[in-house]
Image (tube, rainbow, N blue to C red):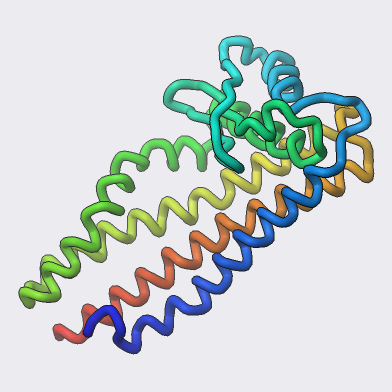
Length: 226
């Protein structure tokens, strides 16, 4: 059957990388969640401080449930921090909060990769939901144009994942620079924050590798119809 054909082997390295990356980010966050910052700041305090210092007084900082659910919403201009980050004063919490403020700064400055990523979100949401359906339908019915259209739509997902990489790396770089420059974290604390953000970055790398592997797999399967 299609689901168990030999092309699946292409995904194995990507799935392993994704699993390792997810374990790494969770374990690293847990490790540095045990170390409080010497200044005693909470994640929400750091986020509010950095936003205000950059003139983003109108960007609220909200608490949301879940672990590592932190994100900046550019459509509503809201920063949402998980409970552990919002209330926590650990090195990990400060690093994550500063990272999300990095996205707010990118939005304010109209950082090109972020602008591009935001502009294609509707297309990607549509593509990710329907690309596989169209591909499977084309494969089963033997309709080559439908197969190709499914691959084309899935390509938008790959582009989105690739554009996400500089967005996330830049937000982390901004976070570490400002935490050091403003003396929010000390040198040994900065190393912990960097470890957390580096581990988180690997999850985005893994997502990009997985998307690319899936695209290659679709292309290889489509050639069976030639």
